[in-house]
Image (cartoon, rainbow over all chains, first blue to last red; front, side, top):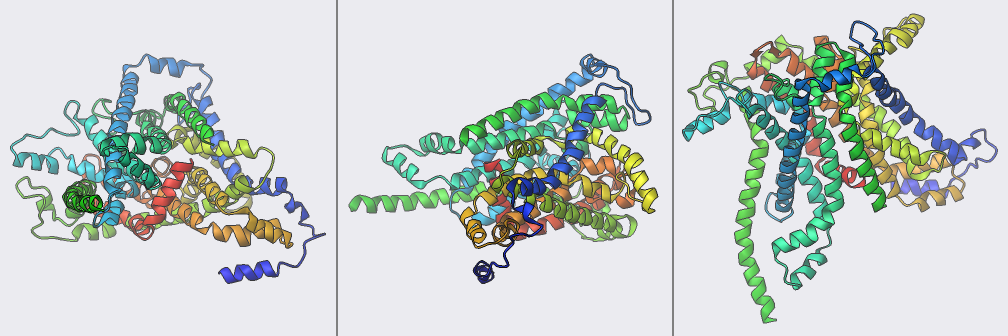
Length: 308
Length: 305
């Protein structure tokens, strides 16, 4: 391979001067051509649907009929709906609680895996599995583990004489069950990203801290955390966006039930727009993701620019 | 001299103790991570009378069986779902690699009007979740079906459609693959010294030749990362497939399993777990071959954008 490249550099002729492809030598032409496929796909299938979604949200479009402009009626209807407010609360609780747990577990696992021990590579490879395996498929396994009659968790609890809950039915348990799956699914991303960040930290920092008499905890707070900060920030923001917009786990486990107790923006939008055929109203619901998203995007871009 | 020796000795002792603690904690973390998969596997080999018994110890199987796997292939479209997923994932990956490699190179190396804004634009689309787009996207697809594609099909006698067809998914999936792939590849291209290309161009090579023969081969590890990520993400995609596909034989693995093996309130748990396990095999295989690319690619993505 290397040899081949060398020969190419050594014999670069024939010369191109005067060819009809000369315009490709201009960076402005070549650059525009190169970026065109990506931009076209993004314009047709992301930018256009996005603005079309804005339009849909102010119409009464259904699957059967082309809608008419109805102003902000979809939004005012939602704001008067207690079911919608429950969804808002659920989304914030779901995102807030799971993010805290994923962060703490992620850091802990990263610290753990950053030490040398036997099977360390194998442990690292296994930890990432929930993030690789199709979420819907692993969530189906969780649904079986949460089964009202045959839950394996409840079997374990019974062995120590505790009556387990109906995971996807009783009181707050449905939401807690969803959160557990989300934490299980999301922690690997945190752990592996943090681990990679820790491995780039120059060991002399720790040596210097040791000479200054800093213990393990002090080193963690004063060396590890500050140096990980950029990674922590990006991981947190990406994960918050994805959790806030989560669909799969809820849809497979509870479909938003019982009585809307586990609806998130995405599942409510799906139920309203697809199952309930009210596309306009569904589009209005998904748009509530947007302000939060904007704030996060703005924040990420600002921080990345500062680093540059 | 003496102090060092004492330090070494004590650290050796501490090392042993902390080694056991580390090992235990790591075992706990790995066990928690893997339990659902173990449970999936166990369930898939259990006969129904053991599955639905409250008395039997759920962690053991008395008479293991492959009946659920046989059922899956003889009574459902499972084989088609696998093929569909494979076709969609491979095609979407190829399209994304093509578009993202060119865009990544352009944004990393070439100066052209609007480059900066387009770069940030691509990054922002990376952050837009599918959830925000799926409803208008379905409407867009159906109006393209009724408009442009109808005319096209009448003209050429074809039957191309975006809804309820694999072609639709192949066209849609690059929308969430291209943005992050481009972002990842920009990083890779930037890490390759420009001098190499410059030398070639001074020697008379065209710009496009120096890209194709010099920079691209050096960026192949990045392209590989992008490929395995794109494949995995396409294989795992759920929401778009759910709203785009309706007929059983056109479904991909995730929607086939969740919609065809659950009928109303009847869950065929044995088949469900067998299907979930088999449906995970392709990505698990890709993953086991490329663990290091996964880890480095993932963190490059996270660190650089």
